[in-house]
Length: 252
Image (tube, rainbow, N blue to C red; front, side, top):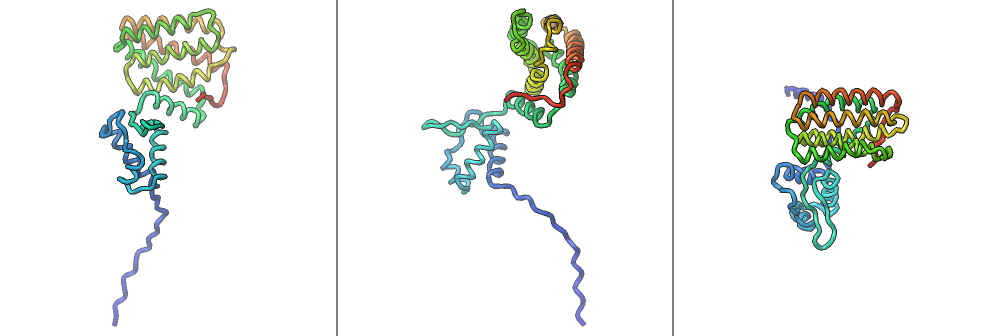
């Protein structure tokens, strides 16, 4: 009598996600760039050579390079001296990513202001500890532009943006610089409102910025953080009283 075969367990498999060839090649090159194996400025092999080395099609190689270019990890130059050259991630690329997140998620001005209140006082404290004379010069230039009585709304807001980004730069923390630059650009777009930015707001902003800059110059981290916290909270409260938009549009 033959023995019965053991019952096979019921196994259910779902769809298997197989990476596309361009994604595989882009990931391989990305890891070599981020690890430092491919240094900044290094030229990647020519397109024809990459096809030969990887045994992938020219279309696949081109798409992989396009992916890396979008991620700001390579820059592609045309012409006889052209090709694909390695570039490392920068604070500018991080700022662009933050801006795209804000636009894509349609983040409210209130949320942007809350984030600034959480981060910027610490930026001011770091700036007081780490600032250079060049950092102070940049803050002074922005303060002078903010106090210009002949500046129109756009020039005032640009100077205001330059000052807030300048505080982040003075922190000498690359993550904070990239994040605060993208955040400040979004707040610039969200407060471009003539009914809010009147002479009173300009005067208060100018005085607050000079007070914070003075604390940064004197390397008084506690005062810089405290004054920045008061400033961004007051500015946020006033801005939100006149702006109830559901999202902020940031220009490309």
